[in-house]
Image 1: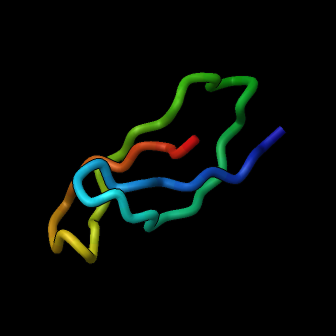
Image 2 (image 1 turned 45 degrees about the vertical axis):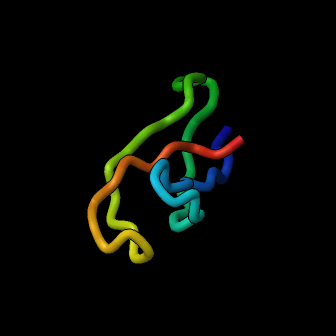
Image 3 (image 1 turned 90 degrees about the vertical axis):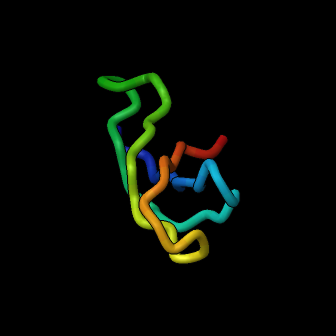
Amino acid sequence: MRDAITFKCTVCGEENYISTRNKKKHPEKMEVKKFCPRCNKQTAHKERK
């Protein structure tokens, strides 16, 4: 079962990216490094609640 998730910048708090993941195989929250246009640099993006 794949669910849509939103990634939120840990620096400025802006929600920039939408993706999907399998919650049964990966129950923990995801964290990825992505480009934030508001910060204008690569920052850690965490899955928002």
